Amino acid sequence: MRRAGKDPLRGLSPEEREVAERIVQLGDRVLKTMFGTLETYVEVAPDGRELGPAERFELRKRLGQVARAGVHLNVERELVDEAVGEVDLRSSRALLRTMRHSILLALSDDSETRGRAMSAKEMAFAAKPAYDDWGHIMKGR
Amino acid sequence: MSNSDRNDAPTLTDAERAALDAQVAGLELVTFYVEHFALADMPPEPASEREAWERLEAMAVRWRESENHRDTLDPELWAPGLVDVLAAIEDSLVITLLDPLGGDAVIGVDEVAERVDLPGDEDAPDE
Image 1 (cartoon, each protein chain N blue to C red):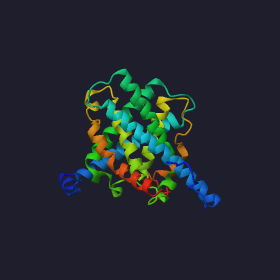
Image 2 (spheres, rainbow over the protein chains, first blue to last red):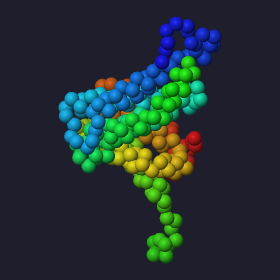
Image 3 (cartoon, helix red, strand yellow):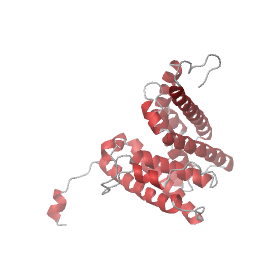
Image 4 (cartoon, each protein chain N blue to C red):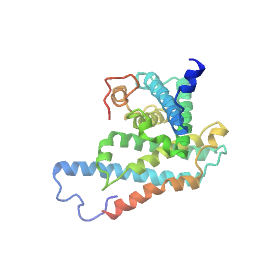
């Protein structure tokens, strides 16, 4: 999210800078988690089958990252709601929740529950609003 | 309740029914989390861990059903603050289950009580 070169926060008051740095830190984490998880999800492509140990390991690792990003979003929830417009993270927050649900289902021991997990294609489609919002965020920087 | 009373009762739409079911499951998850995780000094018992995974899965099923019927998520159908607190609890549980020693940033009991406007809880703040 940060670009080398000129300080993008130049000219801000110390308070504004502190808020901006928090939103940048949160945005970085959300973006990395979202992209990384989507990549793994599409690679594993849950389809109701029982996943192999390596697939389970990768998805569990992503599940932990998604949950930590969710906790960070929870801690900064007021910032997320106030920053709407310039840096709208609400669609990313919704996507991360969807990812958590679907990974939990894909990891289930129960075949019927596993069958409820999103396909890779459905997940890619669900990611579109967040991708669009990130397009706006990047364009504005 | 007599048959005539039952006939006079308002019928829930599919969205209202799904939202109600999700909230019941959600409130059970809140209670479970508070009793077995947030208030516990010790790491959770294996039985609690198993139950936690099962409850997380069950909640994920409810959310997936809600995603298929978006109107289920109409804020008017939900107790104020519950969706976000549930998400925070689900994230906290996942972190605690995957890394019992790394649950440094999980949601606490006070925060749950402060943010969930439970039915019959007159003192809880409206959002």
